[in-house]
Image 1 (cartoon, rainbow, N blue to C red):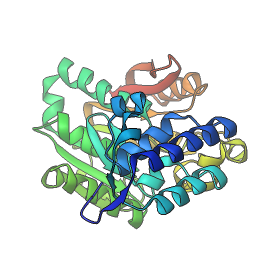
Image 2: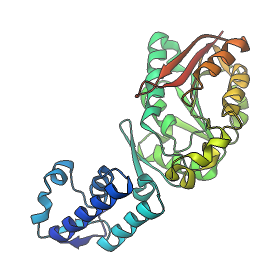
Image 3: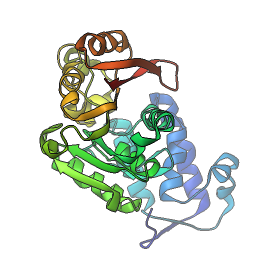
Image 4: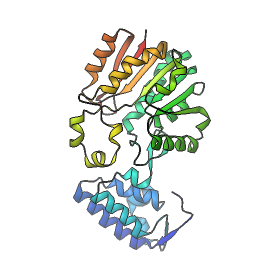
Length: 301
């Protein structure tokens, strides 16, 4: 948070707001830890200070916005169910602090496992880590930045059809000092990467995979605020995964990695599609942090 424009509040006044806000959170089913995250971001208070509530006795606390504005943000969280990450403008993913906005899907902790799987694949075959890697549907740029961070000898390509998402992705790459490592393209999936046919060592994607009929049943934070373009995967949720299975062989090198995130319950179908296509081998389904089958990885024959 930028504290160049400071507002000062007494510790007691902020503590009273903190107590009331935690009560509001509990009453409405929002995690009380979100209140802590708000004060970490906007008041610079650390977790220990918040846990001990020792700031109550401080005469003055400098904040990045007024208490009235902070309360207004919290009202949006309670009443409109705006995700906390959109209110603070930031989310924490792997070792990154990423800027986020309403034009991009908020990166989830489970998606971090995609980068871990890339590490496993490139450790097994070191040559893979030196080629071209693509992040299709980059959104906030989280995956592309994760790839650039671990594949220091690879060329990274990030594609998205949304100009708003690409602007945030570029902003994150600059913020993390990775902009010189990532090539950004606006377009639909492989379309801007025709020059890489047969030259891609690895494709990573977190495509839309939620069935259209399920969108209306999602939490209001997701249903009302996150871009449906990044969520809706068609009737069975597999439209884009099916497309990536069909098209990736045109771009991957022999032995190249095909890696996607998917919805719980889709693993068996995705594995069957990869096997039946005939172009892939070593098909594996991997669990996320909760033990739910979430990722499919295969290699081009």
